[in-house]
Length: 234
Image (cartoon, rainbow, N blue to C red):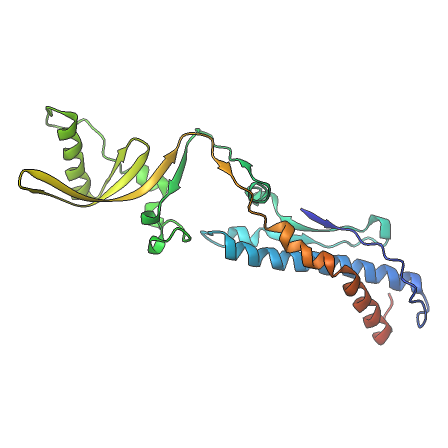
């Protein structure tokens, strides 16, 4: 969560019946504008840099206005709600927590348009894929593990299931025998990471707050001039 704290001693006192109230209002408005702009910038960065399955993350980026009438206590905030706490890990980086110690990473063939920047197709969510992996026992006994694997490929292709090889999951696009050899075409759907997954920092909040923080004084002056023009001091 990014916090904005502003305390400007501005000499612009002429034209106000109550400069103290005007100054307080301008500072409060400035902080709230900075927080709102940070939220707006953060959403733009997230939509550009992250692969989003839906609008949940975007809707979880929020800002909180300060309503205090005491300048030292004024503090506006912008950042992700608790429900999207995973965005803290994206901002700072670190080890991703996994309940079972495994992370299934969707490959390009599992994503919309086969693009790594797109989300995994709904029909290929890992929860659904896991239920459709070819498993034994088979009715027939095989002389070798190779023969058993070949049989699994035929079953997967016929019943539109998936096969697992070591720490990878595949779908079988085609399979046929030719000259005593079996030729297959498979798609790599998931890679299963068994080691703890370390997330590299992908800052989205800090860069979103740079310009609003830098423009703080100009925003403050704009608010002062606006009140001077409208003669509105509450």
